[in-house]
Image (cartoon, rainbow over all chains, first blue to last red; front, side):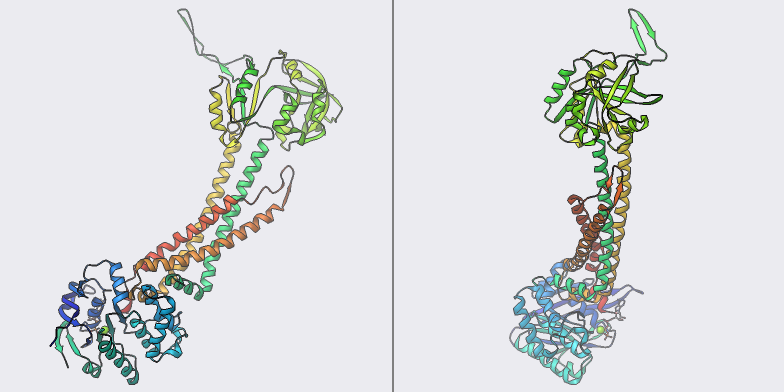
Length: 231
Length: 408
Ligand SMILES: Nc1ncnc2c1ncn2[C@@H]1O[C@H](COP(=O)(O)OP(=O)(O)OP(=O)(O)O)[C@@H](O)[C@H]1O
Ligand SMILES: [Mg+2]
């Protein structure tokens, strides 16, 4: 088997919560994620999946252990460095589709790219529209985000996560609000991103079929990795 | 739009028109009151200064009262005076021509004149009024104080041509019941009495001056004091900038041992009143501006707590803390800018209205005007306050922890 490139690596990540009483949510979690891999994260409710994902997203910096991304140590970087890293290399899809309600769907998708400034606003608009087309949302493009259904908002937030072509896409139950048809659409997109664009996807899910169809699944229990492999 | 932060700020502002307007209106009211009150004090101060300079020169040079020395030694005898009093010496300035000339040579002096003042008693029949008569060269005096402008009857030339003429303050003429062309008897404190013809009546609008002051020729005044034709007791001088009179006063004091005083010393009580008024109005209007700033602070704080999800999203997608600060500072600035512009307009309207209020008397129309420096100052202050008021909520927004928001 050819040597695969490690995109993300967690080394002994531990995390404690101190409220209401001190307890350890993550217990020395270590794993690697490779380039172009579609990884799913499963486990019982409360097992620490979201917590781990927030640490991987660089938004939560209050953990022990070390995090590496794209061959760089992330742990200990400054907030501004982490902001830039998130902007450029990490797409995040939230459990509850968070959009800016006063902006159109198109604008919502454009915002991370307008910050990155890799393309001109005109090009960004075109690219954002393409993403919406791919998610079958082009008819909603100019509607305010608040006027969309839950599933539609979820897909807009997926389009937003993809706009800067991040190397890593992190998702917390991305299909939680979607019917089977849209779940299939999202799954196909993820599959395509990993195989064709070589992007790495780490998705938390409760959907067993979804997990089974992914490249590899990590099951968590009580803050530890229980199973790590193809289901 | 190039900068997404500005676009986000504008979108927030447009989506919350009502709150934006309320915040801006707070600034409008605060700023208009600030502008109005400060224009009021400034206009009034200028009026009062102009009023002062109708009869007061920037600089006065005279011989001060001397007190007897408490210890007098003659040979080996030391005499102690228990109760030293003012020495009753002459008020004469020695060699006044030379002093006037050296004063005039100073680069900051525009005019300098010699004068003979004396305490005068104006009599007509049994009526008597006390006051001060000024022996002057009326042409020079007019050049300095523009007396001709305030003549109700007669002209200043009539005094120059008539050695026995007198120009009376209107208050004296009223009390004595005399008119132009009448004769009155004037007595000095050293017992000289003369019959003088009223060749002019003036009215400055200041009762203190109008009720006691008169002008005679300098030679006439010398006779009233039984002094020689060289006698002079006061020198008045004007300078290029009355605000710097204190500096000039100290400089002139180097030239002479006589007492040099500027108008600020002479009018110390009026100036103290003006300063008090200025501070009072200043602090009131400042306080109103602070209250307006609190309005901005409040509205921005509530915007931020309502927009906390948006802030978390922006930070999650790579917007920095400084971007968040820029977004909310821009919102504060827009509110402040709107409020400040409207405030300047409202304040200007108030000034305009008051300008057309007739107060009457010597004041005429209300002494208030549009003063660019005050308008500029209000504008800058208004913006500064709103930015300051916006900074603290913006800083708070920048420190929002997105994870804690997403977990809810
Ligand atoms: N802010 C917090 N303070 C204290 N405890 C917390 C906090 N957030 C989460 N926890 C606890 O940490 C544990 C892990 O939470 P986490 O959200 O990571 O679970 P999860 O695996 O994502 O569950 P689910 O599948 O229900 O989303 C839970 O026991 C939870 O109660
Ligand atoms: Mg979770």
